[in-house]
Image (tube, rainbow, N blue to C red; front, side):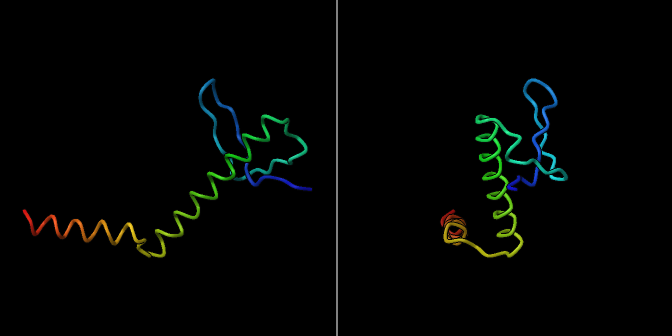
Length: 77
């Protein structure tokens, strides 16, 4: 049985909470709710990936470029 490792809990009209301590079976979701869970799952995976990158302290090309531009900007001023 497929499931998501979180549950979206509606709190009010515009506020939802993602509870990662609960599991949501795919079979329990309607079409639109399933799409919402898929998009939320993608966002959570992306956030986790970004956090792992930060923890590994590996600079991306953009990070090196930004550092270089800051150093050049400091010299020119």
